[in-house]
Image (tube, rainbow, N blue to C red; front, side, top):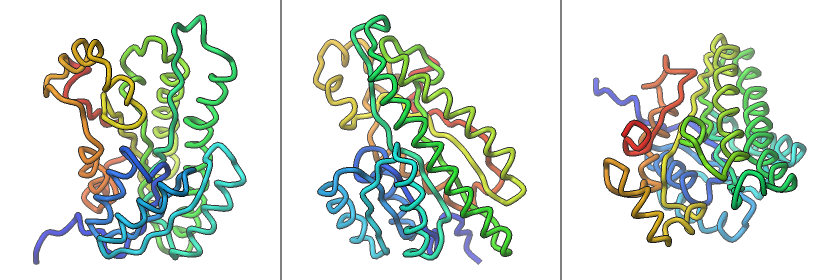
Length: 260
Protein backbone atom coordinates (compact mmCIF):
# COMPACT_ATOMS: atom_id res chain seq x y z
CA UNK A 1 0.00 0.00 0.00
CA UNK A 2 1.37 3.39 -1.00
CA UNK A 3 2.35 5.91 1.68
CA UNK A 4 -0.03 8.84 1.20
CA UNK A 5 0.01 10.92 4.37
CA UNK A 6 -0.28 14.18 2.45
CA UNK A 7 -3.59 13.32 0.81
CA UNK A 8 -6.11 15.72 2.34
CA UNK A 9 -9.16 14.39 0.53
CA UNK A 10 -12.17 14.60 2.85
CA UNK A 11 -10.60 17.23 5.08
CA UNK A 12 -11.67 20.88 5.36
CA UNK A 13 -9.28 23.77 6.00
CA UNK A 14 -10.15 27.35 6.96
CA UNK A 15 -7.59 30.08 6.24
CA UNK A 16 -8.06 33.60 7.57
CA UNK A 17 -6.60 36.21 5.27
CA UNK A 18 -6.72 33.44 2.69
CA UNK A 19 -7.46 35.68 -0.26
CA UNK A 20 -3.86 36.79 -0.84
CA UNK A 21 -0.22 36.52 0.18
CA UNK A 22 0.90 33.70 2.43
CA UNK A 23 -2.70 32.78 3.23
CA UNK A 24 -3.58 32.17 -0.40
CA UNK A 25 -0.28 30.35 -0.94
CA UNK A 26 -1.25 27.97 1.85
CA UNK A 27 -4.88 27.64 0.75
CA UNK A 28 -3.87 26.84 -2.82
CA UNK A 29 -1.52 24.05 -1.72
CA UNK A 30 -4.13 22.64 0.65
CA UNK A 31 -6.66 22.59 -2.19
CA UNK A 32 -4.18 20.89 -4.53
CA UNK A 33 -3.71 18.23 -1.83
CA UNK A 34 -7.47 17.61 -1.88
CA UNK A 35 -8.81 19.67 1.04
CA UNK A 36 -12.01 21.66 0.78
CA UNK A 37 -11.31 25.29 1.67
CA UNK A 38 -12.91 28.11 3.62
CA UNK A 39 -11.40 31.54 2.94
CA UNK A 40 -11.88 34.52 5.24
CA UNK A 41 -11.04 38.04 4.10
CA UNK A 42 -12.37 41.57 4.34
CA UNK A 43 -12.11 42.37 0.62
CA UNK A 44 -14.98 40.72 -1.24
CA UNK A 45 -13.40 41.18 -4.68
CA UNK A 46 -10.23 39.41 -3.52
CA UNK A 47 -12.35 36.72 -1.87
CA UNK A 48 -14.14 36.04 -5.16
CA UNK A 49 -10.87 35.88 -7.08
CA UNK A 50 -9.35 33.50 -4.55
CA UNK A 51 -12.46 31.33 -4.61
CA UNK A 52 -12.24 30.95 -8.39
CA UNK A 53 -8.55 30.06 -8.18
CA UNK A 54 -9.15 27.43 -5.52
CA UNK A 55 -12.23 25.91 -7.15
CA UNK A 56 -10.11 25.24 -10.23
CA UNK A 57 -8.50 22.44 -8.18
CA UNK A 58 -11.85 20.63 -8.03
CA UNK A 59 -12.59 21.18 -4.36
CA UNK A 60 -15.45 22.85 -2.51
CA UNK A 61 -14.73 26.47 -1.54
CA UNK A 62 -16.57 28.83 0.78
CA UNK A 63 -15.49 32.49 0.85
CA UNK A 64 -16.70 34.64 3.75
CA UNK A 65 -16.23 38.33 4.45
CA UNK A 66 -14.89 38.35 8.01
CA UNK A 67 -13.04 40.92 10.09
CA UNK A 68 -11.19 38.75 12.61
CA UNK A 69 -10.94 41.63 15.10
CA UNK A 70 -14.74 41.48 15.44
CA UNK A 71 -15.41 38.76 18.03
CA UNK A 72 -19.04 38.18 17.12
CA UNK A 73 -18.22 38.04 13.41
CA UNK A 74 -15.67 35.30 14.13
CA UNK A 75 -18.13 33.34 16.28
CA UNK A 76 -20.90 33.58 13.71
CA UNK A 77 -18.72 32.92 10.68
CA UNK A 78 -17.07 29.87 12.23
CA UNK A 79 -20.48 28.40 12.98
CA UNK A 80 -21.62 29.14 9.42
CA UNK A 81 -18.49 27.52 7.99
CA UNK A 82 -19.00 24.34 10.02
CA UNK A 83 -22.66 24.21 9.00
CA UNK A 84 -21.82 24.69 5.31
CA UNK A 85 -18.80 22.39 5.11
CA UNK A 86 -19.73 19.81 7.74
CA UNK A 87 -16.51 20.09 9.75
CA UNK A 88 -13.18 21.87 10.07
CA UNK A 89 -10.00 19.80 10.30
CA UNK A 90 -7.45 22.59 9.94
CA UNK A 91 -7.69 26.26 10.86
CA UNK A 92 -4.95 28.68 9.83
CA UNK A 93 -4.96 32.00 11.71
CA UNK A 94 -3.10 34.05 9.13
CA UNK A 95 -4.91 37.40 8.86
CA UNK A 96 -2.73 40.27 10.00
CA UNK A 97 -1.69 43.87 9.53
CA UNK A 98 1.56 45.78 9.83
CA UNK A 99 1.83 48.88 11.96
CA UNK A 100 5.26 50.40 12.06
CA UNK A 101 6.30 54.03 12.35
CA UNK A 102 9.28 56.35 12.03
CA UNK A 103 10.34 55.37 15.53
CA UNK A 104 8.98 53.63 18.61
CA UNK A 105 8.59 56.99 20.36
CA UNK A 106 6.28 58.12 17.56
CA UNK A 107 4.02 55.05 17.59
CA UNK A 108 0.43 56.17 18.10
CA UNK A 109 -1.84 54.43 20.57
CA UNK A 110 -4.45 54.14 17.82
CA UNK A 111 -2.06 52.15 15.62
CA UNK A 112 -0.96 50.00 18.55
CA UNK A 113 -4.57 49.10 19.41
CA UNK A 114 -5.40 48.31 15.78
CA UNK A 115 -2.41 45.99 15.37
CA UNK A 116 -3.27 44.14 18.58
CA UNK A 117 -6.94 43.89 17.59
CA UNK A 118 -6.18 42.12 14.32
CA UNK A 119 -2.92 40.27 14.97
CA UNK A 120 -3.56 39.07 18.52
CA UNK A 121 -7.27 39.36 19.34
CA UNK A 122 -8.11 38.02 15.87
CA UNK A 123 -5.90 34.98 16.36
CA UNK A 124 -7.33 34.41 19.84
CA UNK A 125 -10.95 34.58 18.64
CA UNK A 126 -10.26 32.39 15.61
CA UNK A 127 -8.40 29.64 17.45
CA UNK A 128 -10.78 29.69 20.40
CA UNK A 129 -13.76 29.04 18.15
CA UNK A 130 -11.82 26.38 16.24
CA UNK A 131 -10.99 24.65 19.52
CA UNK A 132 -14.65 24.68 20.55
CA UNK A 133 -15.56 22.87 17.36
CA UNK A 134 -12.71 20.36 17.57
CA UNK A 135 -13.26 19.58 21.26
CA UNK A 136 -16.96 19.08 20.54
CA UNK A 137 -16.10 16.66 17.72
CA UNK A 138 -13.73 14.78 20.01
CA UNK A 139 -16.52 14.40 22.56
CA UNK A 140 -18.60 12.74 19.85
CA UNK A 141 -15.86 10.23 19.04
CA UNK A 142 -14.19 12.18 16.23
CA UNK A 143 -10.95 13.58 17.71
CA UNK A 144 -8.24 15.44 15.85
CA UNK A 145 -7.49 18.71 14.18
CA UNK A 146 -4.65 21.04 13.33
CA UNK A 147 -4.34 24.69 14.34
CA UNK A 148 -1.76 26.86 12.61
CA UNK A 149 -0.96 30.43 13.61
CA UNK A 150 1.18 32.70 11.47
CA UNK A 151 3.72 34.42 13.69
CA UNK A 152 6.78 36.16 12.23
CA UNK A 153 10.56 36.45 12.21
CA UNK A 154 9.81 39.65 14.15
CA UNK A 155 8.85 37.50 17.15
CA UNK A 156 12.44 36.35 17.64
CA UNK A 157 14.54 38.89 15.73
CA UNK A 158 14.65 42.58 16.68
CA UNK A 159 12.15 44.52 14.57
CA UNK A 160 13.03 48.19 14.85
CA UNK A 161 10.09 50.58 14.44
CA UNK A 162 7.69 47.59 14.56
CA UNK A 163 7.28 47.04 18.28
CA UNK A 164 3.51 46.60 18.21
CA UNK A 165 3.69 44.09 15.37
CA UNK A 166 6.55 42.19 17.03
CA UNK A 167 4.69 42.08 20.35
CA UNK A 168 1.67 40.44 18.74
CA UNK A 169 3.76 37.88 16.93
CA UNK A 170 5.67 36.95 20.08
CA UNK A 171 2.41 36.57 21.97
CA UNK A 172 1.08 34.23 19.29
CA UNK A 173 3.96 31.82 20.02
CA UNK A 174 3.04 31.68 23.70
CA UNK A 175 -0.64 31.22 22.85
CA UNK A 176 0.12 28.32 20.52
CA UNK A 177 2.21 26.50 23.12
CA UNK A 178 -0.58 26.83 25.69
CA UNK A 179 -3.20 25.60 23.22
CA UNK A 180 -1.01 22.64 22.25
CA UNK A 181 -0.58 21.45 25.82
CA UNK A 182 -4.24 21.79 26.74
CA UNK A 183 -5.70 20.24 23.59
CA UNK A 184 -3.36 17.33 22.93
CA UNK A 185 -5.78 15.07 24.82
CA UNK A 186 -8.35 15.76 22.09
CA UNK A 187 -5.93 14.91 19.30
CA UNK A 188 -5.69 18.59 18.38
CA UNK A 189 -2.27 19.89 17.35
CA UNK A 190 -1.22 23.57 17.44
CA UNK A 191 1.84 24.99 15.74
CA UNK A 192 3.13 28.36 14.58
CA UNK A 193 4.89 29.33 11.37
CA UNK A 194 7.32 32.26 11.42
CA UNK A 195 7.82 33.80 7.96
CA UNK A 196 10.87 35.91 7.23
CA UNK A 197 11.03 38.50 4.43
CA UNK A 198 8.23 37.44 2.10
CA UNK A 199 7.08 39.22 -1.08
CA UNK A 200 3.45 40.04 -0.27
CA UNK A 201 1.28 43.14 -0.27
CA UNK A 202 2.40 43.87 3.29
CA UNK A 203 6.04 44.22 2.21
CA UNK A 204 5.42 46.01 -1.08
CA UNK A 205 7.07 49.23 0.12
CA UNK A 206 10.22 47.33 1.11
CA UNK A 207 10.24 45.43 -2.17
CA UNK A 208 10.34 48.74 -4.02
CA UNK A 209 13.18 50.13 -1.91
CA UNK A 210 16.60 49.58 -3.46
CA UNK A 211 18.21 50.41 -0.12
CA UNK A 212 16.15 47.83 1.77
CA UNK A 213 16.75 45.13 -0.82
CA UNK A 214 20.48 45.85 -0.80
CA UNK A 215 20.76 45.87 2.99
CA UNK A 216 18.30 43.16 4.00
CA UNK A 217 17.59 40.73 1.18
CA UNK A 218 21.27 40.52 0.33
CA UNK A 219 21.72 39.10 3.85
CA UNK A 220 19.29 36.25 3.19
CA UNK A 221 21.56 33.24 2.56
CA UNK A 222 19.17 32.01 -0.14
CA UNK A 223 19.56 35.43 -1.82
CA UNK A 224 15.91 36.08 -2.58
CA UNK A 225 12.57 37.14 -1.18
CA UNK A 226 10.38 34.34 0.07
CA UNK A 227 7.22 33.78 -1.96
CA UNK A 228 3.68 32.85 -0.81
CA UNK A 229 4.01 29.46 -2.49
CA UNK A 230 7.00 28.70 -0.25
CA UNK A 231 4.44 28.11 2.53
CA UNK A 232 2.36 25.55 0.71
CA UNK A 233 4.45 22.60 1.82
CA UNK A 234 4.40 23.43 5.52
CA UNK A 235 0.63 24.00 5.35
CA UNK A 236 0.00 20.61 3.78
CA UNK A 237 2.37 18.90 6.22
CA UNK A 238 0.73 20.44 9.30
CA UNK A 239 -2.77 19.69 7.98
CA UNK A 240 -1.88 16.09 7.20
CA UNK A 241 -1.49 12.89 9.16
CA UNK A 242 2.27 13.15 8.58
CA UNK A 243 2.41 15.64 11.47
CA UNK A 244 0.19 13.67 13.85
CA UNK A 245 2.79 13.86 16.68
CA UNK A 246 4.09 17.36 15.92
CA UNK A 247 2.63 20.04 18.18
CA UNK A 248 3.61 23.13 20.18
CA UNK A 249 6.29 24.12 17.70
CA UNK A 250 7.30 27.34 15.96
CA UNK A 251 8.82 26.82 12.52
CA UNK A 252 10.97 29.60 11.07
CA UNK A 253 10.83 29.86 7.27
CA UNK A 254 13.18 32.69 6.36
CA UNK A 255 15.86 31.37 4.00
CA UNK A 256 18.24 31.19 7.01
CA UNK A 257 18.16 34.97 7.58
CA UNK A 258 17.88 34.76 11.37
CA UNK A 259 20.91 32.52 11.82
CA UNK A 260 23.25 34.29 9.42
